[in-house]
Image (cartoon, rainbow, N blue to C red):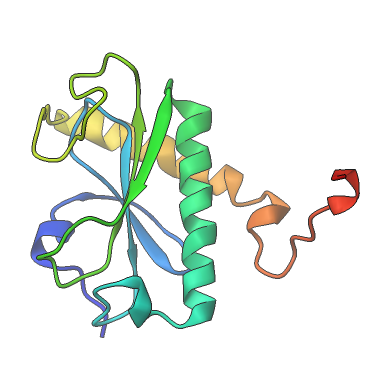
Amino acid sequence: MFELVPDLAKKAHVIDLKLCKVLLENNALYPWLILVPKVANVKNMLGLCMEDRLQLMREIDLCEEVLVENFPHDQTNVATVDNLCPQLYIHIICRKKGDPDWPGTVWNNHFEPYTSDDEAAMAAKIKKAIMIKQTDPKYMQGMHHPDYSTFE
């Protein structure tokens, strides 16, 4: 049975997608989502079947596009970097030149927690944007057929 590990369970829940729970990292310095595949006992992507790996990529793309469309940024970072957590999860972060950790890494550096009201508002804003973006046919499994005729 799938269950979030305690550290991830503490994070604000944004929305459940087909494969992943979407969580908000409690760092107001960055628009920062965490996707956790709802599959028990999976520590890395090799633990997912190919269909779930493809769905994970769709959901990463969906969430990255939502962040890009809703927050100023110069770069997005997508990473799975935890060697100790027994659960697979993926970070999606919007970065701006001049942010407190630019151009370096955000891991274990500057941290500014949201107020509880701001965290709830941020989670609600992102949830609404994800719900709207999900209606884009490119995110409907088996429905997206790219038009390659424009490529030479």
